[in-house]
Length: 274
Ligand code: SAM
Image 1: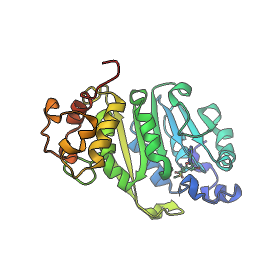
Image 2: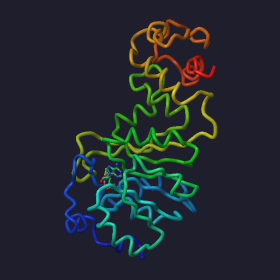
Image 3: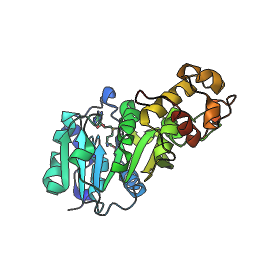
Image 4: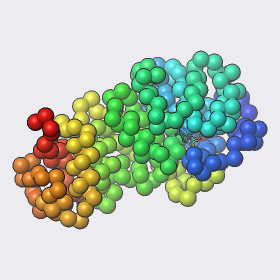
Protein backbone atom coordinates (compact mmCIF):
# COMPACT_ATOMS: atom_id res chain seq x y z
CA UNK A 1 0.00 0.00 0.00
CA UNK A 2 1.29 3.49 -0.86
CA UNK A 3 2.42 5.88 1.87
CA UNK A 4 -0.34 8.28 0.72
CA UNK A 5 -2.93 5.89 2.25
CA UNK A 6 -1.47 6.37 5.72
CA UNK A 7 -3.03 8.68 8.34
CA UNK A 8 -2.08 12.36 8.00
CA UNK A 9 1.14 13.21 9.84
CA UNK A 10 -0.67 15.82 11.92
CA UNK A 11 -2.87 13.02 13.28
CA UNK A 12 0.20 10.90 14.04
CA UNK A 13 1.80 13.81 15.90
CA UNK A 14 -1.41 14.33 17.90
CA UNK A 15 -2.03 10.65 18.64
CA UNK A 16 1.51 10.05 19.93
CA UNK A 17 1.84 13.41 21.68
CA UNK A 18 4.89 14.46 19.67
CA UNK A 19 5.19 17.96 21.05
CA UNK A 20 8.46 19.20 19.58
CA UNK A 21 11.50 18.95 21.84
CA UNK A 22 13.97 21.73 21.23
CA UNK A 23 16.88 19.79 22.69
CA UNK A 24 16.37 17.13 20.02
CA UNK A 25 16.16 19.68 17.18
CA UNK A 26 12.62 18.60 16.39
CA UNK A 27 11.27 20.55 13.40
CA UNK A 28 9.05 18.24 11.41
CA UNK A 29 8.30 18.24 7.68
CA UNK A 30 4.67 17.53 6.90
CA UNK A 31 4.57 18.60 3.25
CA UNK A 32 4.65 15.56 0.98
CA UNK A 33 5.91 17.59 -2.00
CA UNK A 34 8.92 18.63 0.02
CA UNK A 35 9.76 15.19 1.39
CA UNK A 36 9.48 13.77 -2.14
CA UNK A 37 11.76 16.52 -3.39
CA UNK A 38 14.40 15.55 -0.82
CA UNK A 39 14.16 11.94 -1.94
CA UNK A 40 14.56 12.99 -5.60
CA UNK A 41 17.67 14.99 -4.62
CA UNK A 42 19.14 11.72 -3.31
CA UNK A 43 19.24 10.35 -6.87
CA UNK A 44 18.57 6.75 -7.81
CA UNK A 45 17.79 4.72 -4.69
CA UNK A 46 17.18 1.44 -6.49
CA UNK A 47 18.78 -1.36 -4.52
CA UNK A 48 20.26 1.10 -2.01
CA UNK A 49 20.23 0.68 1.75
CA UNK A 50 19.11 4.08 2.99
CA UNK A 51 19.84 5.38 6.46
CA UNK A 52 17.57 8.08 7.82
CA UNK A 53 18.72 9.76 11.02
CA UNK A 54 15.85 11.16 13.08
CA UNK A 55 12.67 10.00 11.29
CA UNK A 56 10.48 11.83 13.84
CA UNK A 57 6.81 11.19 12.96
CA UNK A 58 7.93 9.64 9.66
CA UNK A 59 7.20 12.17 6.88
CA UNK A 60 10.50 11.74 5.06
CA UNK A 61 10.43 8.04 5.94
CA UNK A 62 7.16 7.67 4.01
CA UNK A 63 8.68 9.31 0.94
CA UNK A 64 11.70 7.02 1.21
CA UNK A 65 9.43 3.98 1.49
CA UNK A 66 7.70 5.15 -1.70
CA UNK A 67 11.07 5.10 -3.51
CA UNK A 68 12.71 2.00 -4.99
CA UNK A 69 15.18 1.81 -2.04
CA UNK A 70 15.89 -1.74 -0.93
CA UNK A 71 15.59 -1.04 2.78
CA UNK A 72 15.25 2.02 5.06
CA UNK A 73 17.07 2.12 8.40
CA UNK A 74 15.43 4.78 10.55
CA UNK A 75 17.58 5.68 13.57
CA UNK A 76 15.76 7.73 16.21
CA UNK A 77 16.66 8.84 19.72
CA UNK A 78 13.20 9.88 20.89
CA UNK A 79 11.19 6.90 22.07
CA UNK A 80 7.88 8.69 21.43
CA UNK A 81 8.74 8.84 17.71
CA UNK A 82 9.63 5.15 17.69
CA UNK A 83 6.13 4.36 18.88
CA UNK A 84 4.70 6.64 16.18
CA UNK A 85 6.62 4.72 13.52
CA UNK A 86 4.90 1.50 14.59
CA UNK A 87 2.16 1.92 11.95
CA UNK A 88 4.72 2.30 9.19
CA UNK A 89 6.62 -0.70 10.50
CA UNK A 90 3.57 -2.93 10.49
CA UNK A 91 2.72 -1.82 6.95
CA UNK A 92 6.19 -2.12 5.41
CA UNK A 93 7.61 -4.99 7.45
CA UNK A 94 11.33 -5.72 7.08
CA UNK A 95 11.80 -3.06 4.41
CA UNK A 96 11.73 -0.57 7.30
CA UNK A 97 14.16 -1.15 10.14
CA UNK A 98 13.44 1.13 13.08
CA UNK A 99 16.43 1.47 15.36
CA UNK A 100 16.39 3.19 18.72
CA UNK A 101 19.69 4.93 19.19
CA UNK A 102 21.90 7.95 18.91
CA UNK A 103 22.86 8.75 15.32
CA UNK A 104 26.09 10.24 16.66
CA UNK A 105 27.18 6.97 18.19
CA UNK A 106 25.85 4.21 15.96
CA UNK A 107 28.49 2.64 13.74
CA UNK A 108 26.39 2.67 10.56
CA UNK A 109 28.63 0.62 8.22
CA UNK A 110 28.69 -2.07 10.88
CA UNK A 111 24.91 -2.50 10.97
CA UNK A 112 23.83 -1.52 7.45
CA UNK A 113 25.12 -3.29 4.37
CA UNK A 114 26.11 -1.41 1.20
CA UNK A 115 25.46 0.30 -1.09
CA UNK A 116 24.53 2.91 1.52
CA UNK A 117 23.04 6.37 1.19
CA UNK A 118 22.13 8.65 4.09
CA UNK A 119 19.04 10.81 3.58
CA UNK A 120 18.00 12.95 6.52
CA UNK A 121 16.51 16.14 7.84
CA UNK A 122 19.13 16.38 10.56
CA UNK A 123 18.67 17.71 14.10
CA UNK A 124 20.56 21.00 13.76
CA UNK A 125 22.22 20.93 17.15
CA UNK A 126 24.23 17.81 16.23
CA UNK A 127 24.22 17.97 12.42
CA UNK A 128 27.86 19.02 12.03
CA UNK A 129 29.32 16.46 14.49
CA UNK A 130 27.25 13.77 12.77
CA UNK A 131 28.57 14.74 9.35
CA UNK A 132 32.15 14.79 10.62
CA UNK A 133 31.66 11.34 12.11
CA UNK A 134 30.45 9.95 8.75
CA UNK A 135 33.21 11.72 6.84
CA UNK A 136 35.81 9.79 8.82
CA UNK A 137 34.59 6.74 6.94
CA UNK A 138 33.36 8.63 3.87
CA UNK A 139 33.81 5.90 1.26
CA UNK A 140 31.45 3.67 3.24
CA UNK A 141 28.69 5.85 1.77
CA UNK A 142 27.70 6.30 -1.84
CA UNK A 143 26.10 9.67 -1.05
CA UNK A 144 24.52 11.73 1.72
CA UNK A 145 21.56 14.02 1.10
CA UNK A 146 21.13 16.10 4.21
CA UNK A 147 19.18 19.10 5.42
CA UNK A 148 21.30 21.65 7.30
CA UNK A 149 20.67 25.15 8.45
CA UNK A 150 21.62 27.36 5.50
CA UNK A 151 24.58 28.91 7.30
CA UNK A 152 26.15 25.45 7.69
CA UNK A 153 25.30 24.53 4.07
CA UNK A 154 27.10 27.72 2.97
CA UNK A 155 30.18 26.60 4.86
CA UNK A 156 30.04 23.13 3.33
CA UNK A 157 30.15 24.53 -0.22
CA UNK A 158 32.31 27.56 0.70
CA UNK A 159 35.16 28.40 -1.67
CA UNK A 160 38.48 30.19 -0.97
CA UNK A 161 38.39 33.96 -0.48
CA UNK A 162 34.86 33.95 0.87
CA UNK A 163 33.62 34.40 4.43
CA UNK A 164 31.95 31.00 4.46
CA UNK A 165 35.19 29.15 3.62
CA UNK A 166 36.62 27.54 6.72
CA UNK A 167 37.56 24.29 8.43
CA UNK A 168 34.30 22.58 7.58
CA UNK A 169 34.65 23.51 3.88
CA UNK A 170 38.19 22.15 3.71
CA UNK A 171 37.56 18.89 5.55
CA UNK A 172 34.33 18.18 3.67
CA UNK A 173 35.59 19.07 0.20
CA UNK A 174 38.81 17.15 0.80
CA UNK A 175 36.70 13.99 0.93
CA UNK A 176 33.50 14.79 -1.00
CA UNK A 177 32.04 16.78 -3.82
CA UNK A 178 29.33 18.96 -2.33
CA UNK A 179 26.34 20.54 -4.04
CA UNK A 180 23.41 22.55 -2.74
CA UNK A 181 20.14 21.02 -3.92
CA UNK A 182 17.58 23.60 -2.77
CA UNK A 183 16.63 25.97 0.05
CA UNK A 184 13.73 25.35 2.40
CA UNK A 185 11.94 28.19 4.15
CA UNK A 186 11.43 28.13 7.92
CA UNK A 187 7.68 27.98 7.42
CA UNK A 188 7.92 24.53 5.85
CA UNK A 189 8.65 23.06 9.31
CA UNK A 190 6.41 22.34 12.28
CA UNK A 191 7.35 24.14 14.46
CA UNK A 192 9.40 26.57 12.34
CA UNK A 193 13.05 26.95 13.33
CA UNK A 194 14.62 30.41 13.69
CA UNK A 195 16.73 30.04 10.55
CA UNK A 196 16.26 28.85 6.99
CA UNK A 197 17.48 25.48 5.75
CA UNK A 198 19.20 23.99 2.74
CA UNK A 199 19.39 20.45 1.37
CA UNK A 200 22.91 19.46 0.42
CA UNK A 201 24.18 16.39 -1.38
CA UNK A 202 27.65 15.12 -0.53
CA UNK A 203 29.24 12.50 -2.74
CA UNK A 204 32.35 10.92 -1.26
CA UNK A 205 35.33 10.91 -3.65
CA UNK A 206 36.95 7.55 -4.34
CA UNK A 207 40.24 9.23 -3.34
CA UNK A 208 40.65 12.42 -1.27
CA UNK A 209 41.73 15.57 -3.14
CA UNK A 210 45.30 14.95 -1.89
CA UNK A 211 46.87 12.63 0.68
CA UNK A 212 46.88 13.67 4.35
CA UNK A 213 45.98 12.23 7.75
CA UNK A 214 42.62 13.23 9.20
CA UNK A 215 44.12 14.48 12.48
CA UNK A 216 46.76 16.51 10.62
CA UNK A 217 44.14 18.22 8.47
CA UNK A 218 42.21 18.97 11.67
CA UNK A 219 45.31 20.38 13.35
CA UNK A 220 46.39 22.57 10.45
CA UNK A 221 42.92 23.95 9.69
CA UNK A 222 42.29 24.65 13.39
CA UNK A 223 45.50 26.65 13.66
CA UNK A 224 45.08 28.47 10.33
CA UNK A 225 41.40 29.36 10.65
CA UNK A 226 41.67 29.92 14.41
CA UNK A 227 43.46 33.13 13.45
CA UNK A 228 42.08 33.54 9.96
CA UNK A 229 43.10 37.19 9.61
CA UNK A 230 46.74 36.44 10.37
CA UNK A 231 49.35 35.39 7.85
CA UNK A 232 50.18 31.69 7.87
CA UNK A 233 53.74 32.28 9.07
CA UNK A 234 52.19 33.59 12.26
CA UNK A 235 49.08 31.38 12.61
CA UNK A 236 51.05 28.17 11.96
CA UNK A 237 54.04 29.18 14.10
CA UNK A 238 52.94 27.08 17.07
CA UNK A 239 52.92 23.96 14.84
CA UNK A 240 56.59 24.44 13.99
CA UNK A 241 56.07 24.06 10.25
CA UNK A 242 57.34 26.26 7.45
CA UNK A 243 54.59 26.91 4.85
CA UNK A 244 57.24 27.50 2.18
CA UNK A 245 58.18 23.79 2.36
CA UNK A 246 54.65 23.00 1.19
CA UNK A 247 54.93 25.51 -1.64
CA UNK A 248 52.61 27.88 0.19
CA UNK A 249 53.36 31.59 0.42
CA UNK A 250 53.90 32.33 4.12
CA UNK A 251 52.22 35.72 3.87
CA UNK A 252 48.98 34.13 2.65
CA UNK A 253 45.95 33.91 4.96
CA UNK A 254 43.96 30.75 5.67
CA UNK A 255 41.01 31.71 3.51
CA UNK A 256 43.24 32.04 0.43
CA UNK A 257 44.43 28.42 0.46
CA UNK A 258 43.01 25.59 -1.61
CA UNK A 259 42.12 22.22 -0.11
CA UNK A 260 45.20 20.69 -1.77
CA UNK A 261 47.41 23.34 -0.14
CA UNK A 262 45.99 22.49 3.29
CA UNK A 263 46.83 18.84 2.59
CA UNK A 264 50.40 19.82 1.69
CA UNK A 265 50.71 21.74 4.97
CA UNK A 266 49.22 18.79 6.89
CA UNK A 267 51.86 16.48 5.43
CA UNK A 268 54.57 18.66 6.99
CA UNK A 269 53.42 17.89 10.53
CA UNK A 270 55.88 15.68 12.34
CA UNK A 271 54.70 12.28 13.64
CA UNK A 272 56.21 10.46 16.59
CA UNK A 273 57.09 7.52 14.33
CA UNK A 274 58.76 9.80 11.71
N1 SAM B 1 12.76 13.41 9.74
C1 SAM B 1 11.72 14.12 10.43
C2 SAM B 1 11.09 15.14 9.51
O1 SAM B 1 11.73 15.48 8.52
O2 SAM B 1 9.98 15.58 9.81
C3 SAM B 1 12.24 14.79 11.72
C4 SAM B 1 13.41 15.73 11.53
S1 SAM B 1 13.83 16.64 12.99
C5 SAM B 1 14.66 18.02 12.25
C6 SAM B 1 15.19 15.75 13.71
C7 SAM B 1 14.88 14.38 14.26
O3 SAM B 1 16.08 13.81 14.78
C8 SAM B 1 13.90 14.35 15.42
O4 SAM B 1 12.96 13.34 15.21
C9 SAM B 1 14.75 14.03 16.65
O5 SAM B 1 14.06 13.33 17.65
C10 SAM B 1 15.84 13.20 16.04
N2 SAM B 1 17.12 13.22 16.77
C11 SAM B 1 17.66 14.22 17.49
N3 SAM B 1 18.88 13.89 17.95
C12 SAM B 1 19.11 12.63 17.49
C13 SAM B 1 20.21 11.73 17.64
N4 SAM B 1 21.29 12.06 18.32
N5 SAM B 1 20.11 10.51 17.04
C14 SAM B 1 19.00 10.16 16.34
N6 SAM B 1 17.96 10.99 16.17
C15 SAM B 1 18.00 12.20 16.74
